[in-house]
Image 1: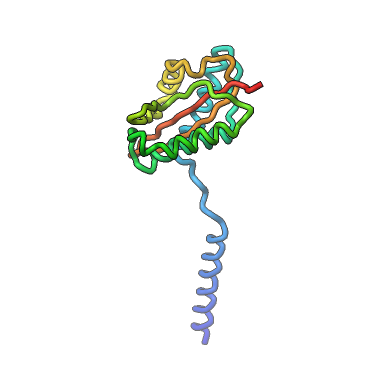
Image 2: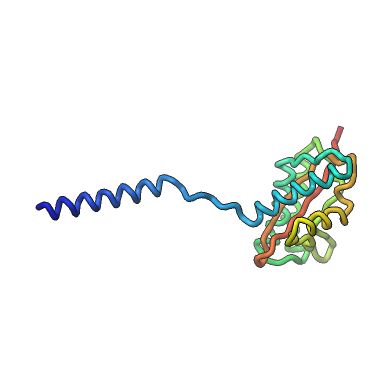
Length: 171
């Protein structure tokens, strides 16, 4: 009888431990995309400060527009797609941008578009220095009239790509 009682209590303790660990989710690790986005946002802020410009404000809906655009590339796991394959994603992008009436499109970085194909062009670099050089080289982030931006990251074949669009105030 003692053995059965010990076995039952051992099973109950095991079940209790199992239930407790199930109640506390594992610590969520930051993904490579989240890390890249945070690094880009920080580098953009530092770059604008070095240029004597106001920092850009990330607008959530504008970032959703960017994410809608890059999602089609992530799904296909390709950095270049025929324009016909990106049409719906581009419509979602422009629709989300248009809904943000406080901001007016100024310029985009990280992708090119033509009637034939669309491409993601900005691979997240390996070092902070390379990222800062990538940002400085574009000129996209130099406009003092730009006050807001949307940003997105996407992983394609293990590499993180990023896009950003800057906006001026509609006022």
